[in-house]
Amino acid sequence: MAPCSKVAEALASVEGRTGDRGPGYEAILAKIKDLSSPSTAADDLVAIATSFFHQSLGVVVTRSLLTAFVTTVKELKNDDMWIDVGTRTLDLLAAQPSHFPDAVATIRDLVATAHENNEDFVAAAKTLAEIPLDSAQRQVPVKQRAEIWIRIVRNYLEVDDSTAAELYINKLKNVMHQVQDQDLTLHFNLSQARIQDAKRDFLSAANKYHEISFSLAIAEEERLHTLSMAAKCAILAPAGPLRSRTLGRLYKDDRSSQLAEFGILEKIFLDRLLSPAEVDKFSEGLQPHQLATTADGSTVLAKAVVEHNLLGASKLYSNIRFDALGSLLGLDAEKAEVTTARMIEQGRLVGRIDQLDGIVYFEGGEASGKKGSGRAEVVVGKEIRRWDANVESISNEVENITTALHQKFPAFVEAHLAG
Image (cartoon, rainbow, N blue to C red; front, side, top):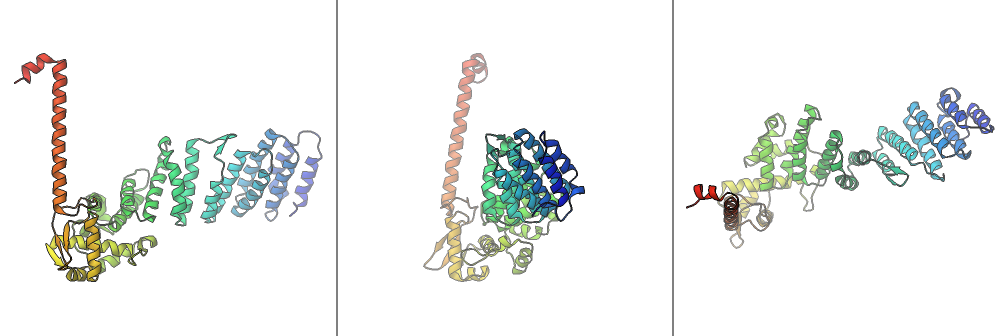
C-alpha cells in the first residue's frame, strides 16, 4: 500500500534535496505520530525505509537512520505492527549490498518479541535462530549468544518440542563455562531438566531439578515447585539402586514434607507397596508426557509402579510363584516373569528364576545397578575384589610416603619409624 499523503509529501521533499538527506529522514521519523495514523503506520514506516535505502546515502548514514527507524518502531508498541514492519524491513535489508548485521539482529529480536507476546513460540524461535551470530562484520560476545540460544530453547519448550530445544542446549553446553551470569545459568539448568524430563530421562531430570531447587536466584515458591518436579521425576524413574539414592536425597530434604507428593515418595523410599488409589491420586498432578504410553502399551507411571511393587515384594518374600506375583502386581504370570527377568538382567533386582517351576527366588541384598550383576554372589565377589584393590592401593601409598620420608629426613625415619 502507498503511504498516507502527509508522509508521501514529506518523503518527496527530502528526496528532492541536493544536500545531506539524513536529517530530513530523522525529522520524518520523529514526527511519525503526527504525520501518520494507526491504520497506515506500518505502510508509512516501510515507505520511509524503502526511500532512504533507494537514495544511496552511504553505509554510515544508512546505519544511523536504521537505528532511528528501529527506535521509532519500538516506541509505537504494537506487536502486529512490529511483525509486519520488521518482516518487510528485513526483506529490504536482504537486498542491500551491505547487509547491516546489527540492524538485522535488532529487528529480528523485535519481531521475535512480538511473536512471544502473541504466544506464537515456534515463529519466535525460528526468527531468533536467523539472527546472524557468525559474521566477519559482526563479533557477538559469548554472553549474547547464550542469551539468544536460551530464548530459542525456552520458546521450543513452550510447545513441547524437546528435540528442537536440545539442538540449542547442545550449543550452549560448549559456551556456558564462559558465561558468568546467574540468571542465564539458572535458565540453562532448568531447560536441561525440562528436556531430560520430556525425553523420559527421569532420573537425570530429578537430580537436575533437585539441584535447581536450592538456587537462591528464584523465589521460595518456585524452589518448592522445582522440588516437586524432582519428586515426580524420581518416582517415575526406573526402579533400582540409582533411583533409590535419588529418592533418599529427596526424602531427607527437610522441605519435602511440604509437598503433595511426600506420601507416595515416603512409601516408595521405604519399599512399601503402592495401592491403586495412591497411584491414581499421584497421576492427577502429572504432565501429559509423563502419562504417555510406552512401546509395550503401558504408561510410564504404570511401569514405574509395577517395578517398584516388584522391589517391594522382594523385601517381603524369599520366593514366590509368578502367578501369585502377577496377582500382586496386577499383571499376568508371563508379564510378571518378563519384568522380573529384565530387572535382574539389568542389575536392578537381586534374584534368580526357576522357569521350570515358575518361581523367582529373591536373594536379598542391594542390587548394584550394573547390567548382569543381578545374582547376589556376583555382587559379593565384585565387592571383595574392590576391597582387595583398595587395600593394595593404600599399602602402596604408605610405602611411597615412607620411601619419600626416608630420602628427605633419614634421621627422623631412623628415630621414629625404623624397626
